[in-house]
Image 1 (cartoon, rainbow, N blue to C red):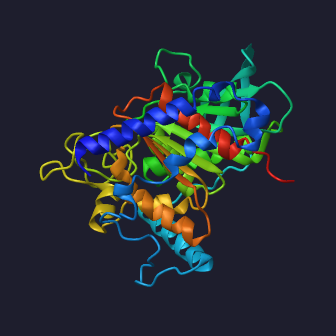
Image 2 (cartoon, rainbow, N blue to C red; image 1 turned 45 degrees about the vertical axis):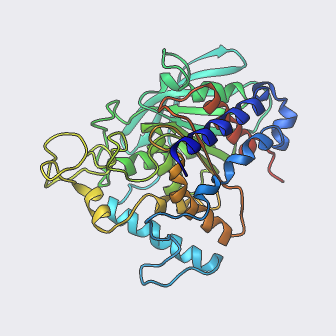
Length: 385
């Protein structure tokens, strides 16, 4: 597709969705619970543009086993999924034992709008705690919940000036319990991984698994309806969390860079604070890998083995996955997402993979409305008892 045509199609799709979602923020609780309010506007984004239909790029199908055979049915996929998970965990390093009942201490509590806001201290890993914000909506639960991850939790609950990154606040206004966490140790470029022997980004997913338990243990939360979301760095965190911890019911990410891409400096999985940690070799400086600034750690091994993040996407099937794409995740990322669509089709599911696109990395009002509509559609519906 010509560049101008691709841009026109993307803009038209964004316009039609914005029009369709104009009244979504005020949708009634009843409509949200039936799952009908947002889907007509979202549905067009759960299929690629014609130019990207059935295009899979250079990625090896995640349905193909290491021995070259192919998963042909759900049972075969179960075995292949276990193989992918095992191989990635071996490459990234093992997790500590997941904490099924992490300690959560309320430090203070206050009323805010239509929810209660609590400052909490949570046990995020053995002998390690982190502070965040727990928002609980008014009314009678159990409620759906979303783990919101970012550099620091204040942004997620609207307590600073970063516009359109307040996912936790907006979801709480819509009737979700939200647990909002920041970087383990507080420094995203030097995350505190304690005694864990895994790559930092995998450790972030481990923290998210413990946070899932913290939410699931709350009487106000329906443990079957817990999602995870994040923007940019938080999007990388949320994507790995959803892939590696299968109890998250659905996953939303905002422009993290959903595949490896060494033409984009912000799709920087090679850095030591993500997948490039290496006890024996240090990169001279941050930045895109080059002969004088080589790849290191697990990232180096993944590239040498011609692996990519579409394998982790596949681990999410058949749980819904939504990409709020911007500068780092343009419409061409459908070539990777089509592999996840294929896995879902094998399992008998459709409309489980969606992507919207905006020109800039920063979220905006329209992209956030799309993201919230995704969670309302897939988590607000009451699960049959």
